[in-house]
Image 1 (spheres, rainbow, N blue to C red):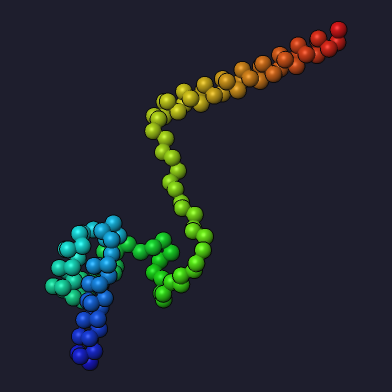
Image 2 (image 1 turned 90 degrees about the vertical axis):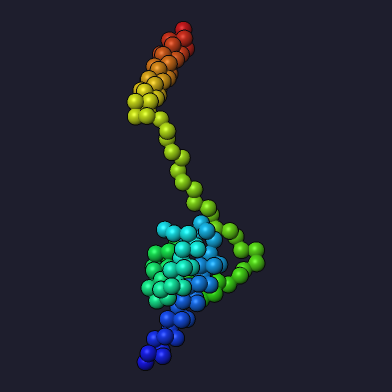
Length: 124
């Protein structure tokens, strides 16, 4: 039984080391890749478990099991973009809304006067 535990620990460590090395720096969390490598080498079981639990970024859909199939001419998925951030202060936003409300009120007033003026001209 100790032999099996040792083999599983070594396999997990090797898998973690390969994963750390192949990972882009932007996909590594909390510590630099070099520190993760040292942690996995010095503490194989704990370091490997921590790497897979905390150190790496997983895709949005979670962990994918199996190999992804490569499709030719497959449409690329739509890229999600963050909504634009409004950098105005609350006071500026309120002032802009007040101006917009006033503009709509004036437009309605103009339309009303055009209708009134149009009705009187057409009656002559």
